[in-house]
Structure formats: structure tokens, C-alpha cells
Amino acid sequence: MNYRSYQQIDRRKSRMIHVGRVPVGGDSPVTVQTMTNTLTTDVDATVAQIRRSEKAGVDIVRVSCPDQESALALKHIVAQVDVPIVADIHFHYKRAIEAAQSGAACLRINPGNIGSAERVREVIKAAKDHGCSMRIGVNAGSLERHLLEKYGEPNPEALVESALEHAKILQDNDFHEFKISVKASDVFLAVAAYQQLAEVCDHPLHIGITEAGSKRAGTVKSSIGLGSLLWAGIGDTLRVSLSAEPEEEVFVGWDILKSLGVRHRGVKIISCPSCARQGFNVIQTVSTLEERLAHIETPLTLSIIGCVVNGPGEALMTDLGVTGGGEGKHMVYAAGKQDHRMNAEGMVDHIVDLVEAKVAAIKAAAPPAVKVAAE
Image (tube, rainbow, N blue to C red; front, side, top):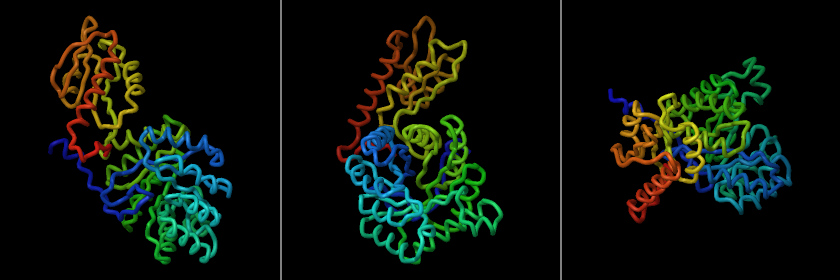
């Protein structure tokens, strides 16, 4: 079996919905989400945070609406950003209605938690009137009492039953523009719940390991959990939940997708861990390049290898490559072939220039009617 056959992921078939202009599910790309952590009533700070996430490549942003002031402030936030906004609603049905009226593209709400059937119908009417989809957000930390009494503890069966109960409420009211999440901070619990849910419905799934932790630990947990699900073809949109700034969640989300070949955006750097053979400071070079190249959206691969042991081989599989050489002379590869040597002095600037020139060439070669997309 050729190794490339392992990269062919058989994605679960799901219905497609829309979060604003962004399709979720079906054959659409797996989208990357994050959530603001500013006070929603601080419109300027919230907009600034969303714009940083937009630069990082976010597709959808969730904003909390815990009170009326926040739900009304949403209108001023939506007007200043390009990505669709999901309003995070927990128990108060009026907040959901206000958020829909304020321009939210989606409502994160569990219909069974907002009271009477009449209140549910009012929220659904507001969603339909204003073109909102919904996300049913089940969390192991906040399961309904009757399910905890039935199962004794949060488990996959309880999460799935909760999700389907909420889904039935929407379906019984002829509302089908919704996705579902069944999150847990425990990787195995979350993955098992998503696997079970994926088998019994065709609703699009928002995947995530909730409350994953700090930037480093949370990245590891999320990569294990989300990577397992995506590898199995499960997941239509994702959020990496980190105790870090929202744009960091976006970067990690994209790195997970790129590592699995699910979706591509920006420069993917393949670099060695460095050792005594390195002809230049690999760690510092890669760190600087990540910052200098973060603005690029066009998919491109770049290998940065410190010596000739693995450098030429890695360069065969990347668009551009650099291999450390002796006496400060390093080899530059283009499309897997030796292209020219460069000096250590001004090395990073030279690599950045090469990448930007390659991106310009890719864009120039694209058909006029086709926009080079990060898909």
C-alpha cells in the first residue's frame, strides 16, 4: 500500500447547514472556530480580538451574550467584522431572540433548557426570521439532572441522549438548520460520545475537547482528540479550547487540519529539531519565519533542515527548502531540486523573499476567475 493512501480520509456524510455565509457539513471544508474572551459590552476590545482571529484564519467566532446589554452590543460588533458570529446563549430565551435581531448568524443554545414549549417556538421563529442557524451544545460538565440520575455519571450514552433530546425539540418544530457538539474535558469520553453520535444521525458535528487547558497541554489534548475524530472522518467544524488568546486557538486548529491533510492554509514549515550537525540556528530561524510568514494565506510547504542528512530528502517533498551547509553556505531547493546557495547573513530575509515570490507566482498562474483559496 502506498503511504499516500493513508491520507485518504473517508469523511462522514452529514447534512449541510449555513452559519451566515459559511457552509458547515456536507462536502464543505472543515471550518475553524474560536470564542472571544472580552466583555461583549466592550465593543472595541471584542472587535479587535475578532480581527486578530480573522488574520489567523478563523471562519466563525462565538461571542457570549450573558445579559441584554451584551446581546444588544452584538449589533455593533457584527457590523465591524467579516466572519459570522455565533451568539452563546445558555438559559434565557430572550437573549437568543435579541441576539438574532442583532445580527447573529447562529445561536448556541440547548432548547430544552430555556423553559416552555412556547418559549422554544419564539426562539425558533426569531431564528427563522433572521436567518440564524443553531448549535446544540452538550457538555459533560452540565448534563441534565435526569440523565445524571439515569446513568450515574457523565458518559457517552448520556451525552448522546442529551443531544438527541434537544435535536428532537427543534425537529418537532420543523427547524433543521442546526449542528451538534458533545464536548468533554476527558479526551476518551468526548471521542466516544462523538463516535456514537456520528453513527445515529446525519447532523453536522462541531467537535472539540472542552476546557482542554493551557496552550501547551491543551494543544496536546486537542490534537489527540480532534485528530482521532478527523482521522475517522468525523467533524464538520472545530474549536480548540485553550486557556490562551483566541487567535492561538485558530493557529492550533489550522495546524491540526494541515497535519492531517484535511485542509490547507498558509506556509507549512517542516523543520528538524536541530542537533550539533546544524549549519545554522534552526530553532531561532523557524521561530522567526513563523512570525514573518504568518500573513500568508496561500498554501505552501517549506522545509528548514539544519544539515545534509535529511535536508535533501525533505526538500524533495516541499515547494521550497533550505539545507544547512558548511562555511555558512546553505543550499536552497525549489520544487525538490537544488537551486542556489545563500550566505548565513540575511538568511531569513532571503527565505521570506523566496516564499513571497513563490506565492505571487502561484497567484499569477491561477485562472483569472479562480481565487486562490485556503481549502
